[in-house]
Image (cartoon, rainbow, N blue to C red; front, side, top):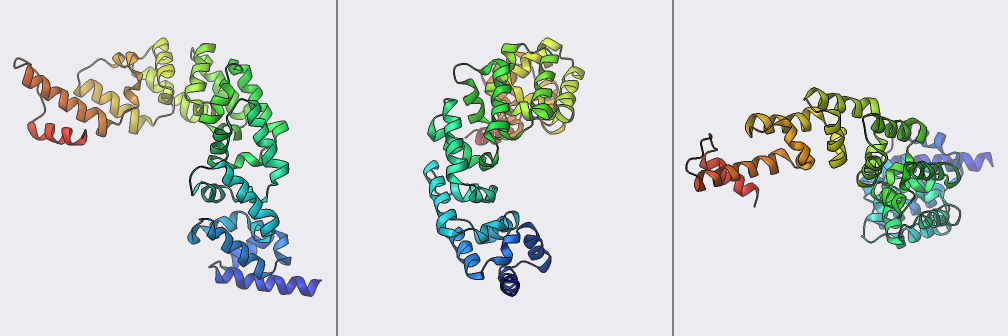
Length: 330
């Protein structure tokens, strides 16, 4: 047995070198997956070629195999092909399955009967349509690796405790952000929800934010939410105004201050000549691109006012700026 194993290991080393791996990378994969020592080069080549045949680019295969060397040891027709065929039933676009495998190659080592089917049933009990479940799993294939009994159920219970256990709201949250299922309730989701409550969001406000933009629940409080909240306070917004902004446009608490919030507020005040608190009535001002949407529209509107109201006594953009803005807007 030892002679055979040694022979196979040598054969696999040649396989790895042929695929562009250096010795350290190859040895690392042997340490990750002891089963490789007993794998014949023919099986590895067959699995490699099959993955390429389903749409995975050759240049991506080394990275995929490095993440999950076990792929080369799996039985192609008993394990890999059935899993791929099952995943294909979930997708609607040609490259979705290949993309999912590239994101999380370990999905191929999970049992269809033991992992994938129970996961589908779990999400169906939350009222999520089968087509949506397919999109979720292919978008975040790591879902297949999570324990239903512990991790997924804990997150569903957490969302239910926020008051989302009606009208299929939990399902809507998960569909909009499948990645939320990968976070820790105690380390991330609960601290974020508690922070949102602490700045004045009511239970109804929190529910609305969770449904409209669930990704905010999984953001780091100290790294993102606290600094953005402090920035809004510094700009003169009162607590109730910040609540209105957050409910109207939740990403305001995770947008970059330097690259997003500050430039927009500066344009609003310095260029448009408006009061900063005017955005309370239209929080989505922060959603639109400054260079591609806000500035061109402002230029066009100013030009229209110049033409239609000759007494308009404000310094307006020149004609070249107007033409450029009109072109930007199509």
